[in-house]
Length: 197
Image 1 (cartoon, helix red, strand yellow):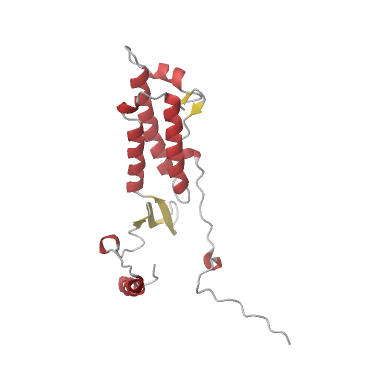
Image 2 (image 1 turned 180 degrees about the vertical axis):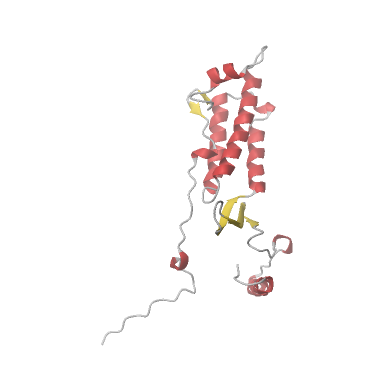
């Protein structure tokens, strides 16, 4: 990241390429772009972008799960709740979904992820509801009241044989503290050694 214009970033890109070359490494052109922080960019599953904070005129850099990362976890949930998986018990499925969603959420917990966690949980809940109705319906359609009475605890939370669906929202979202210049780098000047007289 640079504090300057696009040409400053382009110049730095050339410097980085020169440093990597002796190591036998290179920047992949298809994965390397120069963008403004207001446009945002995806990095390791996160979308990093500067936005105006709602209700204020101040701008902050926000980190949240990328659309691709959210779609990937939804696809995993879909695979676990596909019709071919209906031979397993509901409690085993709930435990499996909790592990998958909690692991994913732990990776994305440092950022603005609460809304994404809620969206992923809503998707998982809907898939779980469809899966349960199809598995336990028998000859008669399983109504929502019956579904709630048999397979949910307080509210509409799935619970069966001691397994309770908690999902991604069970992971607490935390923000990184701004540490400014207190983060050590190879360029951090060392304090001068005291000399004795």
